[in-house]
Image (cartoon, rainbow, N blue to C red):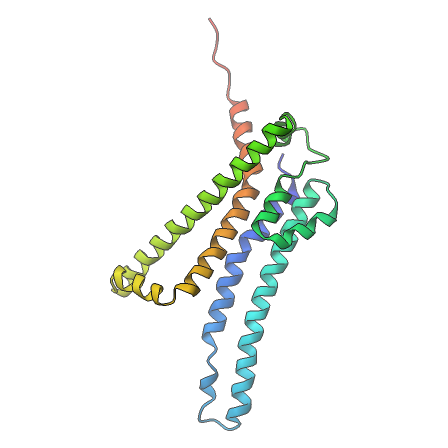
Length: 215
């Protein structure tokens, strides 16, 4: 069986996009200029501006808390020391290291942990380096696919050509590059977390298939 800590960590990390979307929506809905023409304009403008800042700060604080709690649960699922949580500061690379820690108390049905323990050290290093490359490349391709689908959806719903949308994005390329790098980091973390889950599920499905009858 898949450990509950690992499933809970996956759930917490999947909440990050929802939190960022909700925070960004609230941030965009608040316009300090609506205070214009009202008494105490200056005071109300500053209050609304502070509220926007608090929403943005709260969003990033919540995202950070979800990431750290998810990382902590991954460590707990492997019965490792909580000091490993310091590596979470390295972002997706640190999370990749946390995900490759040996499970000190694997369950009997944890085929992935047994698979890792069966490897020689040089094979394990080669395997993890290959996984890092594949996960990084797959995350990049997922981000590109998401970008293209988003552009196509925006073009259909707004009637603006894809060329115009791309030109608008290129005009603020720094902001878009930062956002896409965050997406790549998120996909890396999710893929690393899914790796043992999918391995165990596939191994369980394969082992449950009846053997062909012999004649």
